[in-house]
Image 1 (cartoon, one colour):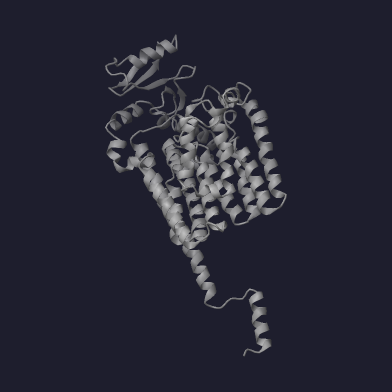
Image 2 (cartoon, rainbow, N blue to C red):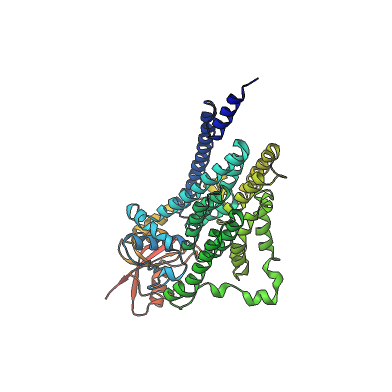
Length: 478
């Protein structure tokens, strides 16, 4: 029988937090193991994203004009200038388009690595950082194998795939901010959660509404008023951005995207908010990528603000799974799934966690070939380089430091060295015009030059490069 004094001393020691000598190293090893595995998953994700971006870049597979736009922004910030983006129009201040002051951090990065491709590297790094954060949480909460399955599934989730494929957008910063904020919320690190969530308002104006919901979730979990202050912060910045800052910097003196919210159409036909094929598919796929587990956590409510403005929008591109619009939803639904598996008693069992992790991974594997990364199965077919020589010669025909009007085909490649205008706007007469004519077989070599003269009366253009794919015309005097 152990003497009472000895028993009391042992209890006292335990209360003071001392552990047996072999326990602390074991726990420390578990933490280090989770962190190492999470970093490995993030590194693998970064390499995968970079492979895809590199194949896009080297095959001149440009998705839209956005990479060129943000390249001009980064270039302006690198020179300590306002983000005047001529691709959007003469003298167009991009801070009047969307409210994204966080992008100022691109300036010093671009100054060291002055290339549009740098922006793709930055975005891929930010996405990969979110993979590390979410994987680390999943492994710690669910165990090594199921956690790794969830982390890997997140890394190749269709929202991130589409964002990588769409190339750079400001939401690249929102993805890791949300990941850090949600993981801090689930770990009850309230100050950290508050700070990361608060930063979202500087990524894009609509994120203020996401911060509103995040603050309410935080207030509910923490039972502290800080969450309500966070909600107020989000609403205040949403109103300030859309009613004051954006209109003051926009040429039309308004929030440029307010007209795309079809409120009157919704009131006339309320069923259109959800009951359209693309909207239904997007909603179902958000549930599917976590095998429905996200439904068991209130964290899923964070998808509502983003889905609301997208589904209210009149542009069909907002409704589906393409482009970058769903990237910010990926950290939400995956953290919700982790939260459900680790907090609710009905789901909290080792066997169910393993089966759930396997189910999430299986869904990710099934969907993998249906989205952008499926192209990696046959890079030669998906990223052909047959026209690379033509593109390189066309680019070589345009010197540095000139003004260029162009379509989106090679826009991002000339934005680094020249002042670029998009042909769809009313622009001042440029020094060069570069056009992709591959969709117009048989056109004469002087087509781009003659069309430029028609757009700019009084100017004269001559062809300096032409083949079956690209034509370059130069303005001449006399």
